[in-house]
Image 1 (cartoon, helix red, strand yellow):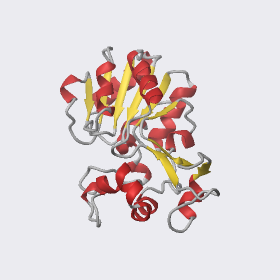
Image 2 (spheres, helix red, strand yellow):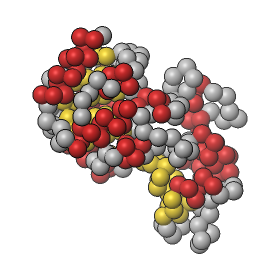
Image 3 (cartoon, one colour):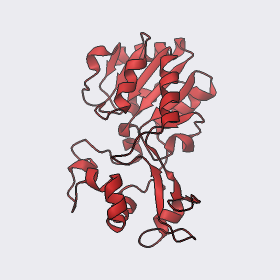
Image 4 (tube, one colour):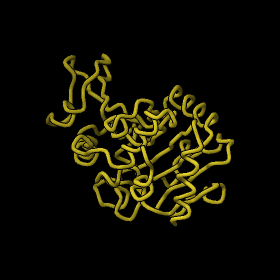
Length: 240
């Protein structure tokens, strides 16, 4: 394992157009639960399966039940960036990391100081009224009682991509462009099973594709380097 981490460090030092593509595992070391691991949200018991609750149709038809779950399980405001977020922000300041492409909605990359963050699934930090479009901060949504309502009376919706909703086209195209031009692609903390996000790896044409994940992924055989280790142990070795 030490040899793999040394190779990873060497590639980071040699590269000047790095893109980081991350999933829920990036934030688990901050205390935020992931979705698909043994202790993840999808393996916990609720009145409805989480993937049903977090769907567009459920939100529209059962906003109270949606927000009961959302406020209980998706409030990321109390969490702080971990060593991975911090090191990535440092690499960006050095000019080596050009973009973070993330499936996470917690805003921790920005909290750590990253500027170029492409949020494929949106962010809990952004919310808007379905009726008039007025924007609201996350604090308002998480602190209000029941379904958050706008001054106009409309229902407020988190600006996150729910099941049955498409990804933002501009964010997707920008992510593809960043990955296509990368000389090193670091894919970390993701099971690589959620489409279309996981398909983005196919746009990388370089020879420094690194997969860092505790468990195996469907793309391990295509990677130039696979590290089955916690992200914190890997990124703490990166000097800023």
